[in-house]
Image 1 (cartoon, rainbow, N blue to C red):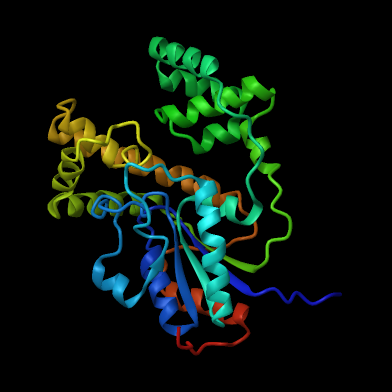
Image 2: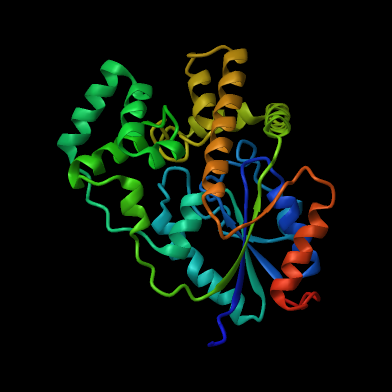
Length: 321
């Protein structure tokens, strides 16, 4: 049997508010790991509080690649992430260290390891018709339609995520095949790293939900709404940009538009974050190659470190970057 001589990489995945960043930092203290963020919101500059971005002190001690690399006015895609992440990983491996990719954006992890499928280009006529239908019956009803035609895609797309719902339904019309099937068909060829996947999967979602609510209240106290006001004051951003559609920011934008009162805003933002966590957990459960850890069980860091040490072959002393 041939020996796998590829360099090593670690994926640390989990739902929002599950403690991924803290664990990644702790592991990087013990092992020769360099951190790479896998988060569709942390790429944006000026979006710090609402994304729970590691603060300047943490980033100074534990640098994360691919944080603060885009302006909120510039869309960022899974293809962009793959194009950015691969050379960063190569540079880390060339230094004799191991890339630890940490985050909760499942599409980015999948695109990185398995490539991107050859999806059809957008069709303005179909998009316009789907938008018109959604105006009549609402996006939740469109979500029900998608669930009938592509249950896998519907499971990871929120019932009010207009852009992704529209795209999934559009792809079905254009190809006659479910989006989830086409995405599985992406061909990355040979992925040049051997990967250990660690997934934080809370057994008791009530604890995660409580943590999500507590964290959002901390964000509010830290000035989250002032952060969104500053983004609005730029004048060039709008609610349909991917950055502003991020969980929490969309609800804050609507609140500052006068569409919700403070209590409604808080409830909607927390609910949206819980729905995001639910989709992330669904995705994690589908990845049968991941080692699962309950972040609320005592000894998480020790158990994760044991898995990493075994994977690295006992190399437990960090080397200089």
